[in-house]
Length: 222
Image (cartoon, rainbow, N blue to C red; front, side, top):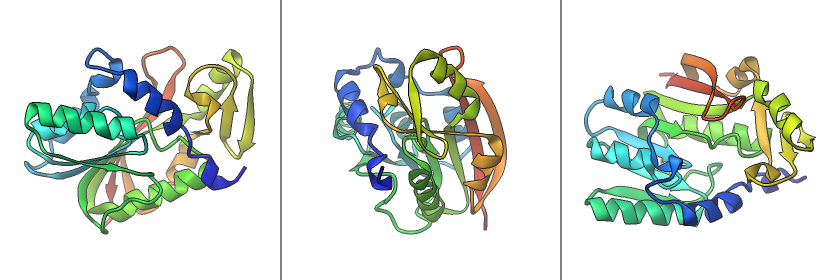
Protein backbone atom coordinates (compact mmCIF):
# COMPACT_ATOMS: atom_id res chain seq x y z
CA UNK A 1 0.00 0.00 0.00
CA UNK A 2 1.37 3.43 -0.93
CA UNK A 3 2.13 5.44 2.18
CA UNK A 4 0.13 8.42 0.97
CA UNK A 5 -3.05 6.30 0.69
CA UNK A 6 -3.10 5.25 4.35
CA UNK A 7 -4.28 8.60 5.72
CA UNK A 8 -7.92 7.90 4.82
CA UNK A 9 -9.94 7.75 8.06
CA UNK A 10 -11.33 11.25 7.41
CA UNK A 11 -13.56 9.64 4.76
CA UNK A 12 -15.36 7.77 7.53
CA UNK A 13 -15.35 10.70 9.94
CA UNK A 14 -16.68 13.13 7.37
CA UNK A 15 -19.91 11.09 7.35
CA UNK A 16 -19.98 10.92 11.14
CA UNK A 17 -19.48 14.67 11.54
CA UNK A 18 -22.45 15.31 9.26
CA UNK A 19 -24.64 13.49 11.81
CA UNK A 20 -23.08 14.87 15.01
CA UNK A 21 -24.70 17.58 17.12
CA UNK A 22 -24.42 19.00 20.62
CA UNK A 23 -25.60 15.71 22.16
CA UNK A 24 -22.70 13.76 20.66
CA UNK A 25 -19.94 12.55 23.01
CA UNK A 26 -17.59 14.18 20.48
CA UNK A 27 -19.07 17.55 21.50
CA UNK A 28 -17.76 17.29 25.07
CA UNK A 29 -14.30 18.71 25.78
CA UNK A 30 -11.82 16.50 27.65
CA UNK A 31 -11.00 17.82 31.16
CA UNK A 32 -7.24 17.21 30.79
CA UNK A 33 -7.25 19.28 27.60
CA UNK A 34 -9.08 22.25 29.09
CA UNK A 35 -7.11 22.12 32.35
CA UNK A 36 -3.85 22.50 30.45
CA UNK A 37 -5.29 25.26 28.26
CA UNK A 38 -6.28 27.15 31.42
CA UNK A 39 -2.62 27.19 32.45
CA UNK A 40 -1.57 28.94 29.23
CA UNK A 41 -1.19 32.74 29.08
CA UNK A 42 -4.30 34.58 27.90
CA UNK A 43 -4.39 34.95 24.13
CA UNK A 44 -2.13 31.98 23.43
CA UNK A 45 -2.00 30.78 19.83
CA UNK A 46 -3.45 27.26 19.76
CA UNK A 47 -3.75 24.75 16.92
CA UNK A 48 -6.45 22.09 17.28
CA UNK A 49 -5.19 19.46 14.84
CA UNK A 50 -7.89 17.02 13.73
CA UNK A 51 -10.46 19.23 15.42
CA UNK A 52 -13.59 17.21 14.64
CA UNK A 53 -16.74 19.25 15.29
CA UNK A 54 -14.76 21.64 17.48
CA UNK A 55 -15.28 20.56 21.07
CA UNK A 56 -11.80 21.75 22.05
CA UNK A 57 -11.39 24.58 19.55
CA UNK A 58 -14.61 26.15 20.86
CA UNK A 59 -13.51 25.72 24.49
CA UNK A 60 -10.15 27.35 23.72
CA UNK A 61 -11.86 30.28 21.99
CA UNK A 62 -14.30 30.75 24.86
CA UNK A 63 -11.28 30.97 27.18
CA UNK A 64 -9.91 33.86 25.13
CA UNK A 65 -7.18 32.11 23.14
CA UNK A 66 -6.39 32.65 19.45
CA UNK A 67 -7.53 29.39 17.91
CA UNK A 68 -6.87 27.65 14.61
CA UNK A 69 -8.73 24.42 13.81
CA UNK A 70 -7.61 22.03 11.05
CA UNK A 71 -9.29 18.84 9.89
CA UNK A 72 -9.18 16.70 6.76
CA UNK A 73 -12.97 16.26 6.84
CA UNK A 74 -14.92 19.08 5.22
CA UNK A 75 -17.93 18.46 7.47
CA UNK A 76 -15.74 19.08 10.52
CA UNK A 77 -14.48 22.50 9.52
CA UNK A 78 -17.97 23.49 8.35
CA UNK A 79 -19.42 22.52 11.75
CA UNK A 80 -16.76 24.50 13.62
CA UNK A 81 -17.28 27.60 11.49
CA UNK A 82 -21.05 27.45 12.06
CA UNK A 83 -20.71 26.92 15.83
CA UNK A 84 -18.17 29.71 16.18
CA UNK A 85 -20.42 32.11 14.23
CA UNK A 86 -23.41 31.19 16.42
CA UNK A 87 -21.44 32.00 19.58
CA UNK A 88 -19.71 35.09 18.21
CA UNK A 89 -16.29 33.43 18.48
CA UNK A 90 -13.33 33.77 16.15
CA UNK A 91 -11.76 30.50 15.02
CA UNK A 92 -9.62 30.20 11.90
CA UNK A 93 -10.61 26.97 10.14
CA UNK A 94 -8.49 25.05 7.63
CA UNK A 95 -9.49 21.99 5.62
CA UNK A 96 -6.44 19.86 4.83
CA UNK A 97 -4.14 16.96 5.76
CA UNK A 98 -2.17 16.75 8.97
CA UNK A 99 0.98 15.82 7.05
CA UNK A 100 1.37 19.22 5.37
CA UNK A 101 0.36 22.01 7.73
CA UNK A 102 -0.20 25.38 6.00
CA UNK A 103 1.48 27.46 8.71
CA UNK A 104 4.91 29.09 9.13
CA UNK A 105 7.50 27.68 11.50
CA UNK A 106 6.97 28.32 15.24
CA UNK A 107 3.43 29.68 14.73
CA UNK A 108 1.76 28.16 17.79
CA UNK A 109 2.22 28.25 21.56
CA UNK A 110 0.28 25.00 21.96
CA UNK A 111 -0.77 22.20 19.61
CA UNK A 112 -3.49 19.67 20.47
CA UNK A 113 -3.89 16.43 18.50
CA UNK A 114 -6.58 14.43 20.29
CA UNK A 115 -7.34 11.05 18.67
CA UNK A 116 -5.94 11.95 15.27
CA UNK A 117 -2.24 11.31 14.52
CA UNK A 118 -2.55 7.51 14.66
CA UNK A 119 -4.85 7.53 11.60
CA UNK A 120 -2.28 6.27 9.11
CA UNK A 121 0.88 4.21 8.83
CA UNK A 122 4.24 5.03 10.40
CA UNK A 123 5.24 7.27 7.50
CA UNK A 124 2.10 9.35 8.03
CA UNK A 125 2.68 9.45 11.79
CA UNK A 126 6.32 10.52 11.48
CA UNK A 127 5.50 13.14 8.86
CA UNK A 128 2.77 14.58 11.05
CA UNK A 129 4.95 14.62 14.17
CA UNK A 130 7.62 16.50 12.20
CA UNK A 131 5.05 19.05 11.08
CA UNK A 132 3.82 19.51 14.65
CA UNK A 133 7.39 20.12 15.80
CA UNK A 134 7.92 22.62 12.99
CA UNK A 135 4.86 24.77 13.76
CA UNK A 136 5.26 24.71 17.58
CA UNK A 137 7.38 27.55 18.96
CA UNK A 138 10.41 26.69 21.13
CA UNK A 139 9.12 26.27 24.67
CA UNK A 140 5.58 25.67 23.43
CA UNK A 141 3.53 22.63 24.39
CA UNK A 142 2.10 19.66 22.53
CA UNK A 143 -0.70 17.44 23.83
CA UNK A 144 -1.79 14.29 21.99
CA UNK A 145 -3.25 10.83 22.22
CA UNK A 146 -1.92 7.78 20.37
CA UNK A 147 -3.24 4.23 20.15
CA UNK A 148 -1.47 1.95 22.61
CA UNK A 149 -0.13 -1.44 21.54
CA UNK A 150 -2.00 -2.70 24.60
CA UNK A 151 -5.20 -2.11 22.64
CA UNK A 152 -4.22 -4.24 19.67
CA UNK A 153 -5.23 -7.63 21.19
CA UNK A 154 -8.61 -6.11 22.11
CA UNK A 155 -9.22 -5.13 18.49
CA UNK A 156 -8.00 -8.52 17.26
CA UNK A 157 -10.51 -10.26 19.54
CA UNK A 158 -13.37 -8.21 18.10
CA UNK A 159 -12.72 -8.42 14.36
CA UNK A 160 -10.51 -9.98 11.73
CA UNK A 161 -7.54 -7.75 11.02
CA UNK A 162 -4.28 -7.62 9.14
CA UNK A 163 -1.05 -5.72 9.60
CA UNK A 164 -0.45 -3.76 6.40
CA UNK A 165 2.90 -2.33 7.53
CA UNK A 166 4.87 -1.99 10.76
CA UNK A 167 2.42 -1.43 13.67
CA UNK A 168 -0.33 -0.45 11.20
CA UNK A 169 -3.55 -2.45 11.12
CA UNK A 170 -6.91 -2.52 9.37
CA UNK A 171 -9.93 -4.43 10.66
CA UNK A 172 -13.07 -5.71 9.01
CA UNK A 173 -16.50 -4.51 10.07
CA UNK A 174 -18.19 -1.23 10.99
CA UNK A 175 -16.36 1.82 12.29
CA UNK A 176 -13.26 3.66 11.20
CA UNK A 177 -10.81 0.78 11.68
CA UNK A 178 -11.38 -0.39 8.14
CA UNK A 179 -8.93 2.48 7.60
CA UNK A 180 -5.29 2.15 8.74
CA UNK A 181 -4.51 2.73 12.42
CA UNK A 182 -1.08 2.86 14.05
CA UNK A 183 -0.53 1.14 17.43
CA UNK A 184 2.66 1.73 19.45
CA UNK A 185 4.51 0.95 22.65
CA UNK A 186 5.93 3.68 24.89
CA UNK A 187 9.49 3.37 23.47
CA UNK A 188 8.12 3.51 19.94
CA UNK A 189 6.11 6.61 20.78
CA UNK A 190 9.11 8.32 22.35
CA UNK A 191 11.14 7.63 19.21
CA UNK A 192 8.59 9.66 17.22
CA UNK A 193 8.98 12.77 19.36
CA UNK A 194 12.08 14.35 17.87
CA UNK A 195 12.37 17.93 19.06
CA UNK A 196 10.20 17.48 22.16
CA UNK A 197 10.85 16.84 25.85
CA UNK A 198 8.15 14.63 27.38
CA UNK A 199 6.47 16.10 30.46
CA UNK A 200 3.70 13.52 31.01
CA UNK A 201 2.98 10.13 29.47
CA UNK A 202 0.37 7.64 30.64
CA UNK A 203 -1.78 4.88 29.15
CA UNK A 204 -5.49 4.55 29.96
CA UNK A 205 -8.71 3.37 28.31
CA UNK A 206 -11.17 5.91 26.99
CA UNK A 207 -14.92 5.39 27.23
CA UNK A 208 -14.92 1.65 26.42
CA UNK A 209 -13.07 -1.12 28.31
CA UNK A 210 -9.85 -1.97 26.51
CA UNK A 211 -9.76 1.27 24.49
CA UNK A 212 -6.17 2.00 25.55
CA UNK A 213 -4.65 5.30 24.45
CA UNK A 214 -1.35 6.94 25.25
CA UNK A 215 -1.84 10.45 26.67
CA UNK A 216 1.09 12.73 26.05
CA UNK A 217 2.12 16.22 27.09
CA UNK A 218 5.46 17.46 25.77
CA UNK A 219 7.43 20.69 25.47
CA UNK A 220 9.12 21.87 22.29
CA UNK A 221 12.85 22.03 22.86
CA UNK A 222 14.47 25.44 22.60
